[in-house]
Image (cartoon, rainbow, N blue to C red):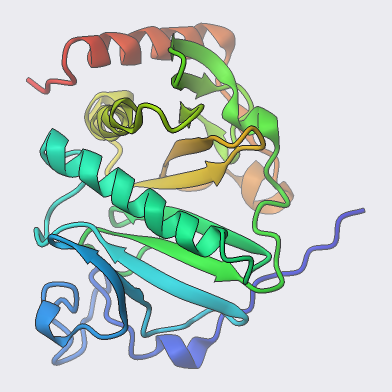
Length: 267
């Protein structure tokens, strides 16, 4: 039987952490720290307005937490960036992840993004997080079939599907990078996925998502979009994920492919 060893959240480290979504905001906490670039410290790497730096609020025990600021645009998102900026962002973020992951200083390194008020994030300014776990295997509940599903696109370098074995449930978009020969195409599908999830899927009722980047055993990367609504009780109480039936998955796959082929344009 697999032991449940929870990640320890250090509440004292989080008490002064800035919050974008808190209903009652503290005085002097209205300034976005990611907009105030001149005061940023412990920067590892930067490219244009993309900045990778140490997280000054280390809320998780036995980790090294880092933040990747995606853009100077406080209200930006993958769904609204230019194609050129999004391509640069994915290449920059991947290089930062690989720097930590290849260091052999951690048992596992997790790379993800929160977007929206229901995503579990604290700041709305667009950013990703790359976290090195010293002792924890962050992928212990993840299986290879979580990256598989109703395929809607496949080339030599990229495969896209609607998950048949979702991590949390219902409809998850998998954007699989099979090798690193076409990062631009991978980035374009990720951008299309964010637009589709926020504007087309569920008729635009989704205002929040998580984007997780999983290293695959074949050396690739799966970028997985998970919509964020209220979590179903089967998952909360039993860690049981649910999936839509085959008819719904096929319909979603065809609709997503059509959206991409039409240039991911929003009317």
